[in-house]
Picture 1: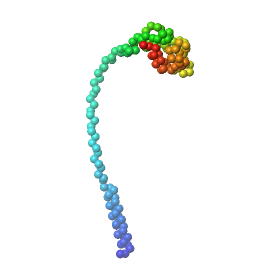
Picture 2 (picture 1 turned 180 degrees about the vertical axis):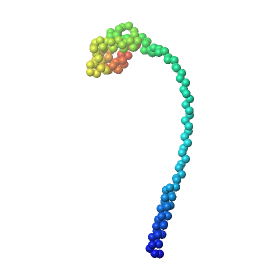
Picture 3 (picture 1 turned 90 degrees about the vertical axis):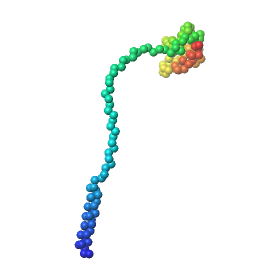
Length: 141
C-alpha cells in the first residue's frame, strides 16, 4: 500500500475509535432510582390545655430526724441538757462554733475544738465539719 493510503486508513481508524469513545461518554448513564422517602406523619395540632399549677406544699421532715434524742452530759453542756432532735442539736452546735469563732480561718471546713468540744470530738484538736456529725452521733441515744 502506498503511504498516502496507509495514512488515510490510520486517520479513519483513529476517527472511528474517537467517535466510539465520544459515543460512550455521551451515552447517558442509567441512574439509580432515587430512594423513596417515607412521608413524615402529619403532626396534629396540639391542643393547648392550661395545666393547673399544683399548690406548693411545705416539705415534710423525716420523722426519724425529728425524734427527740437524749444527749450525753458532755454534749448537753454545749447545746443544752434537754432531749432534742438531731437537726436541732446540729443547729445549736453550729451556733456555738460561730459564737466562739472556732471555725478555721484558712480552711473553713475544719473546726478547731475548744476544751468543751474536744471532749465531744474524742480528744481531737481539729475535726472536719463532715466528721463532726459522726462524732456527735456517739453522744446521742
